[in-house]
Length: 258
Image (tube, rainbow, N blue to C red):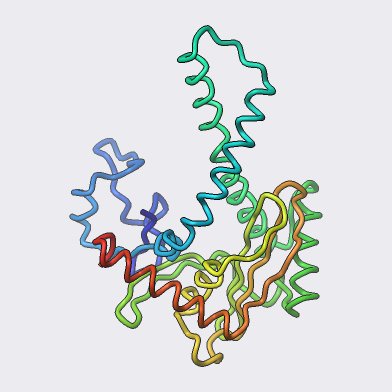
């Protein structure tokens, strides 16, 4: 489970100053729970982990579609095999090599845009996407992401009996919280994505003084261009709040979180 340090607001990973080390001084890939407990850190779940139950029903349909796509792709490669077991082994290896690509692509896009926002530059290959995102955000929301905001801002909070953390893609206190989403072609926004932004906004839905603007920017990983900016309304934010609280209560009832 992705966790954040409530005291520092930092994500608990290899970049955290208290990430455990081995006897030879090298960092653990996954520290034993005993070592983590000995650090006496107050670790809280990420917003995306809390919202996992809300994404489940969407992921089932996506997984079925992706499996059929990978099966067709695998068959087209005409693999050589000596038995049914050999074919299954090759198919599993192919699927495992392909299934993480969307997540990896999404991480790459976030890294590229983070660098662009912080420096105003990008590689020749990535600059068309960055400029297109800049223009769409400016035209749709009136925000200049090269001047008005911060990028990749971690946080952790304890509020109304819930503890959680996350990393805001684009953030300006009292002004906006924006999040980039990469997709396999255009699709409609999900209410869980609104819920994520509501949580990033400290669950503030009754007043609009903290960050009146919550929006997602959707990028097609096939074309590497943005196709939609979704600005969430007050009514939608109320729905997103209910989704987040319901997911948190469910995970707490299951003993997954405190």
